[in-house]
Length: 105
Image 1 (cartoon, helix red, strand yellow):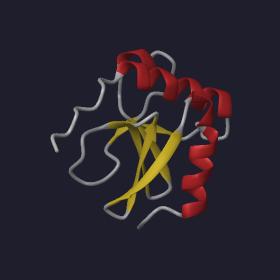
Image 2 (image 1 turned 30 degrees about the horizontal axis):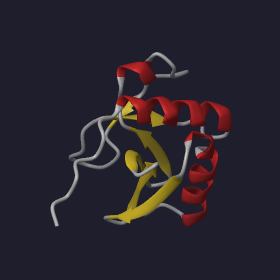
Image 3 (image 1 turned 30 degrees about the vertical axis):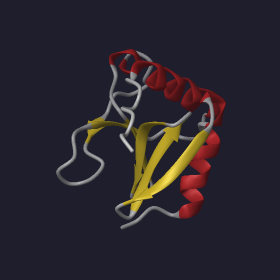
Image 4 (image 1 turned 90 degrees about the horizontal axis):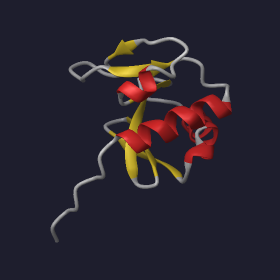
């Protein structure tokens, strides 16, 4: 089941305090990026963050699960209505993740 476009836009808007948020359709669901760096997924109208130790300590509830069958575990974020909280989680995830590798042309 794919995610609803309105839900995807809502999540992008909620994370907006962290930087430039962009979503890209991937395999029927969405990758979500901050300032060009992928930090999470939106699958089946559920929001997932890449796990980092810094963010683990900030989570109100730590729930690790795969966003789709065969995937690695991500933090499942159920509390998506607190814009400041989501922006903080995204900002800290962004800082903890490595820069994307440059593609050769």
